[in-house]
Amino acid sequence: MPTGIQAMEPLKLQIEGMSCEHCVRAVKNRLTATPGVAVDEVTIGSARLRYDPTRTTVDEIENAIADEGYTAFVGNE
Image (cartoon, rainbow, N blue to C red; front, top):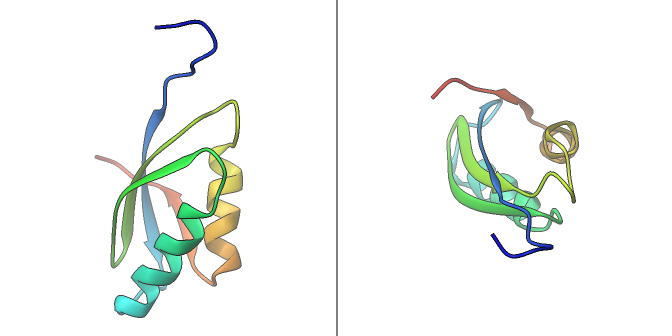
């Protein structure tokens, strides 16, 4: 890996409180706006993404989702 480039870490989140496509869009838009996050997929109840741990943390990602009104936690694959 070239110097200065950090590998993106995969992350799967379970998200409580989502019930419709509006919820999916709100979460996806918020995650997309979070520095260091690349969204792979958001569905009702979960999200798969990659993040740069030098730019953000899992707690910050969970807090971003909480700002939209949902509860997120690290899920099992």
